[in-house]
Length: 302
Picture 1 (cartoon, rainbow, N blue to C red):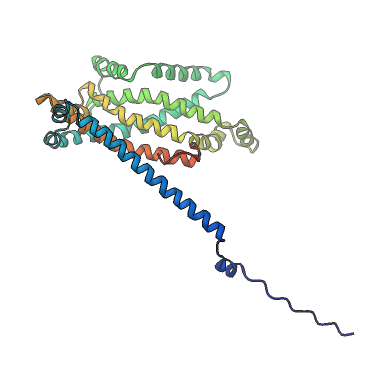
Picture 2: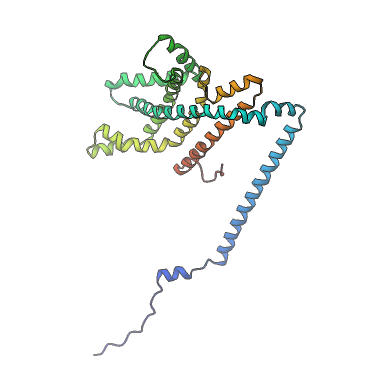
């Protein structure tokens, strides 16, 4: 018995052709136009309000009776050009001190954090030492640590320090102080990892050290990266405090230049250079924080 012919069905359009022919609806185009308009309007409003605020501030400052004297004393262009080479050379010392201290601070801070998170009564002396260290150097002002090391240690007449002992002692003071803060940052990250992560690693046959290295620490470091970068921003600024020991860094070079005629423009130059260093690291910190979800989606651009 012959089978009846089946009606042919049109072939379904391919996904690529359907995507190529897709056009947004009228409602969707209206929504996109509205959003673009809101974005442009917000940008224009922000720019205008910023310009108005700056104009008001500049007008209030420049119209004050003492502005000519302040301009000559703090914003002298010729003095800025004369002092810039010495201040920039001193800033290079600040940068080197900050970079070397940052590496040592990370290593020492992580070691202290691990010591504070060790379990078992046998590790009590190590936990007590780490806790005492962090409590001591978080309680002491940085400038006091600088003075104690910079003027107290040389009195011991210790040998073995060949490169500018005052710079070494100043860097040691920065390391001792900031490692205490960084240790607490790392410890907070380690303790924020849920205990089930360590238990799962142990159930897979990893030892305690392996679980800490391969499971806990990667998560902890990723979580505390934004506050860790904030500490490095502070370290970058506080590297200028080594000038109180007589080190010719950016601050000390500005002070020497100022002492010749009591014109304080070199301090403005030094501050400007420090800001030029700090702002990029601050913006990097904000970018990392947004990627880690530290800032809400409703936050502004700055």
